[in-house]
Amino acid sequence: MTIKRNYIAGEWVEGSGTTRNINPADTSDIVGEYATADAEQARAAIAAAYAAFPAWSQAGIQQRSELLDRIGQKILDRKQELGELLAREEGKSLSEAIGEVGRAGQIFKYFSGEVLQLRGDIQPSVRPGLEASVTREALGVIGMITPWNFPIAIPAWKIAPALAYGNCVVFKPAELVPGSAHALTEIIVEAGIPAGVFNLVMGPGRVVGDTIVNDKCVDGISFTGSVNTGRNIAAAAVGRMAKVQLEMGGKNPLVVLDDADLDTAVECAVNGAYFSTGQRCTASSRLIVTEGIYDRFVEAVLERLKTLKIGNPLNPETHIGPVVDERQLQQNLKYVEIAKEEGGNLVFGGEQLQLETDGFFQQPALIIDTTPEMRINREEVFGPVASVIKARDYEHALELANDTEFGLSAGIVTQSLKHATHFKRHAQAGMVMVNVPTAGVDYHVPFGGRKGSSYGSREQGSYAREFYTTVKTAYTSA
Ligand code: ADP
Image 1 (spheres, rainbow, N blue to C red):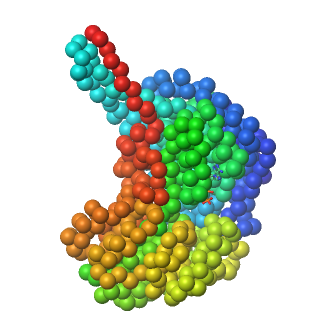
Image 2 (cartoon, rainbow, N blue to C red):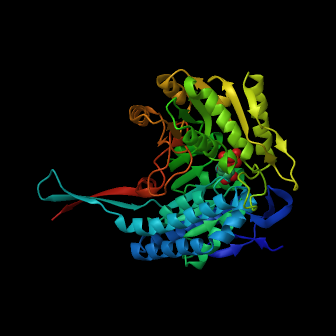
Image 3 (cartoon, rainbow, N blue to C red):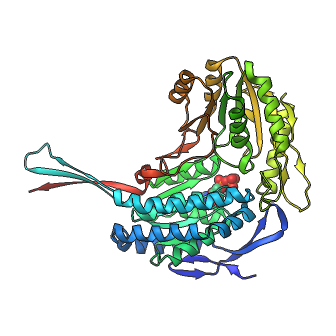
């Protein structure tokens, strides 16, 4: 098996070690072998990005726009093949994986156009004879540290705006999913990226990630991952006054009111809580249901859960693939036990499944009659595990929805315009969903949360420019 290499300063280079990329649906299937970089190679990548920045930031928006368009098109042209690779290394169903690859392509295309929209302001000065102009410039070298759950879409929504606005990139993907990152890098290289502008350094977070975070030549760090890692990265970045943007966990509520359309409520709950194996930071892990519909809702979700097929992601009949790895599976199983010990009533699933291949399969878990102070309602599990909390009425449901240290996405299923409108205004979340699942977003509008979920400016759409550019005010005396 040829070892897939890192890409530093315009060259494909060996690492100081290698890792095996293992299919979580079948641990005998080795997706590939990948070089791992060490701190020295990470520093070489940063130095290359730093050296490439002056030319790239001045290259002009036509060149950058065309490059992004080519990258987007190449991704779209290889959607099926890249979707299979993604499903094999991460475990989401093939249709979800192909959808994610398509999204990555759309993001590059979007920023190919968005970069042409960059504008500033010219204002009269308060001092006679002067003019003030406000423009945006590229930030510099951006370090990107990404998670395993969206192996191509999350890198795309960081890399595309970074390159569009003239920044240079050092990209460190999660250890579990080097395949999609490597394939994306091949595409970026084929599309004609100048040497040093984009660098791939695969390797462990505590070595490669840590080097990126602490190097003074890295002007900005865009991170998506766990709360603990995010906190440490923010502290280190702020310590040396680097710009930082974090997307972390969620404990997203889906409120179901008595007047909800039951089919919509079930669809939102099952899709939001369990699809992509519950491994989405926007997953609906808390189902907050008012008394009048509680029993009917639980019954209907149970019926729907019985129809879901758990299995190999490449099988077109599979709805839910495996958990990403053994560690995550054990964490999920542990939380199901904790929920039971604290008094939750496990009415469906939760157990590991032995299927025809040796993988990390788990039956989705539904835990009812839980209360807000239970750990299952406070800590992010990041698996196919949902808990149900009974609410007296809308006001109580809203209070429960906001009773969390997180604030990424919040959903409501109701036919009441009054309650939907009130919820949109008062849910303490960066994204609010009415009669749609808490997970599943567009790419041209901002993505991000409040409270413990996010830190720094928003990602995606035109709002991405806040992070990837810096503002300059110039005064001219005519
Ligand atoms: P998870 O537990 O879901 O893997 P992490 O926050 O540990 O989430 O990982 C998200 C990303 O952060 C990964 O790319 C990982 O390698 C990276 N990472 C982990 N630890 C560190 C660290 N100390 N410094 C920088 N990056 C890190």
